[in-house]
Image 1 (cartoon, helix red, strand yellow):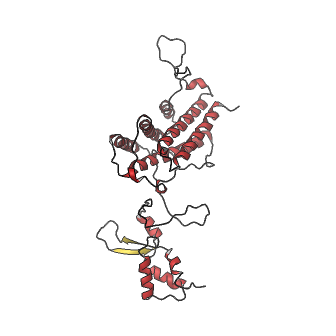
Image 2 (cartoon, one colour):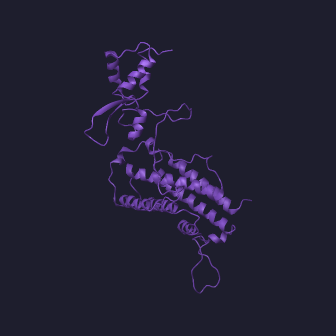
Image 3 (cartoon, one colour):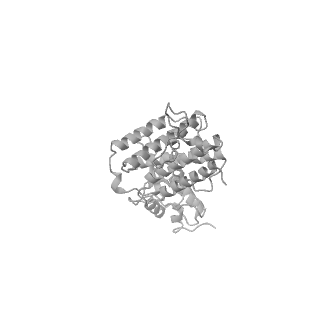
Length: 322
């Protein structure tokens, strides 16, 4: 028979897996709210599992005592059904922090999730791009912190699970809500989250209040790689690249591209036919990108840079060297 602490650990992991699976369903309109509720349930069960380990698996250590001065006999608070009431997530988190068994950043992350949970359960929040981004940053940190705590406390590696949240870049936002302005509740939540992030300590980088999300494109021959296509379609989800990522994706200027063509093709000539073809392809973001030489200066001169993918188009016009 499993010890109570291990039983709670199994249920905590199951709850977090369920939270992630729900979040990664873009068509499920209540995904953010459901993730928040299930993720907090997972954390409460995990903290209770750790608490039982510290108290020799005595289930009574989780019960809330009645605070009555005249009672000499130990009595526990009861729920509506008469069951003994157990300690809350907040209580256990604070006690474990006092014992230096839980990082402060974890509590700040849980505070943000609790505030979001309260808004979802007792009322609602409008969805918009800014709010979704911040919620995902908190959610990513919540999942990362959970996996780290399970490994630190119980030595269990959760790599067998797909512990990740689908990036917002691959979830098409609903156009009907993107234009909504933040109401008082949403502004309050974002401001509250900002104050929590400002308190984040960097002494233990293993745990965090919110996680930065970065989507990068790299070439891969792996069969499991996610196919991504650069397109001019205005209805496609937007992914913004940094200047460094742009240079990685479009590394060649005109001279480099021309030299590459001379090396690759037997019948290549730097003539009008080549220039007309190159200029036509330069209008397609899959093959070329026009950027300023000094991105910080709006008046800086512009220059076109090319992706190596442009050679696939040249292959149909020129003969490759053997």
